[in-house]
Length: 67
Image 1: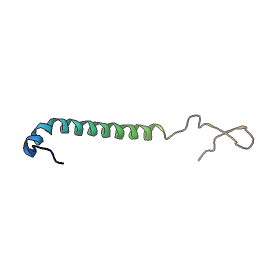
Image 2: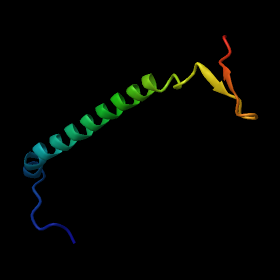
Image 3: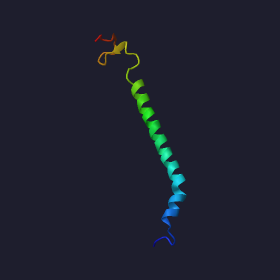
Image 4: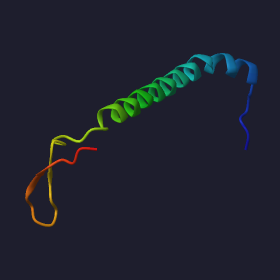
């Protein structure tokens, strides 16, 4: 069954605002996702406590190797 009265031009006009709103929300969400990825990549590069290392075999604390 099809809709009884379809006026595509009228429906386009009526749905223009909500569609723009949804597109804006999706754009904002993508923007926040990009910001999150950038923030995580910049803050996650250096491990905390890198000055000392723990030997996994013995559990003894050793100074970090100088590269």
